[in-house]
Length: 130
Image 1: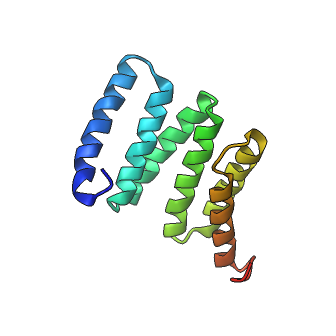
Image 2: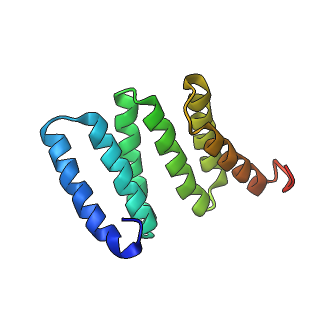
């Protein structure tokens, strides 16, 4: 569903899955599907909707203590904020994601560190060669 023409169909399927998650009280899958809807909205260029979905996913993942899911959603939110040139917001989110990655040994550490370096280069904290 990565091809642009398939995004609306993927969105429909995920919305159906989300409705089922809510019916059976599957909070972990519900959070994953909210995150996925955020990714689809972002891919479709709708950053406002992406922020809403990611925010809902983040709140839910925090509530159910899905630490790896929190780190993943923080990364996704940081990508949005970087695209909106809000480097400070992106950096704060990535710092939290890196803390979680390090504390729990999550595989997203390298990706989060790389994105954090990119954000710091944009603010001038790191030179382009760092």
